[in-house]
Image 1 (cartoon, rainbow, N blue to C red):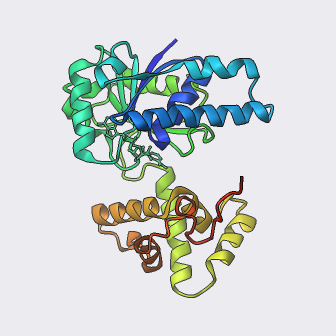
Image 2 (cartoon, protein in one colour):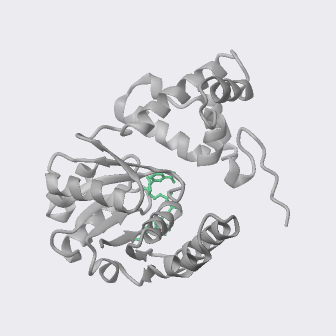
Length: 287
Ligand SMILES: NC(=O)c1ccc[n+]([C@@H]2O[C@H](COP(=O)([O-])OP(=O)(O)OC[C@H]3O[C@@H](n4cnc5c(N)ncnc54)[C@H](O)[C@@H]3O)[C@@H](O)[C@H]2O)c1
């Protein structure tokens, strides 16, 4: 059985760790913030308890699955026995490079060193480790306890064995991997999503339809579970905005320029569900 270390216990890391633990994997989870680590474990408990309450997880599996995610006090302790490390810290190049440099120093020889970054191809991090052949992207989707896909992306120096192990591990933790044979901005899903949502924003900015009607058209006509505006609220409009800005700045392609209406929402702090208001309004849940 593979031993996993997850570095960063935010929205992604906490659930990646728990997803693997549900499939019997021993996980060490680490974060620079002890408070965040505590929150991650509490949130995983609440999510799994809800599954038990709904009859979707046998009650007897609850405590063992939670106990398989063990918090670690620092990175060396987290990775000391890891076969695979998944980095899921803040989306900042300098911070990620520091983590990868430390992984290069302390991770066991031969461990796969993966980044969950949505925007940074592994070639921007791998050289910091001194063992770029062991590095790749493993890009999960939010929320990782629900979303089935993992995009495994090989960098220019990634070894075949690293790719094979990352693909196999994604399956071991109950997820479906796809392989990108070379690095490309936005990987597969976000490239396609960006083009669809860019078109939705273009229709909105041109006054062709309301955002509600564009969502309805996409949901009923394409059978997508959420239209682009509802999905934006769900993911966080700041996340959508920053991803677009990144694509625009790195490609210079006008098609990626963030919509003015999206920018206005972000400036106003209307970021979607997490702030109670985005394109739609989300009254606080009662009780
Ligand atoms: N949120 C998404 O929808 C999503 C989807 C796919 C991929 N990602 C990627 O996952 C990564 C994490 O995103 P998130 O949404 O979970 O962010 P988040 O802000 O919720 O969590 C980041 C966590 O990293 C911790 N951290 C920061 N520096 C650290 C360090 N040096 N060592 C250990 N922990 C550190 C922070 O304390 C925080 O808890 C990013 O690279 C992002 O691109 C996010």
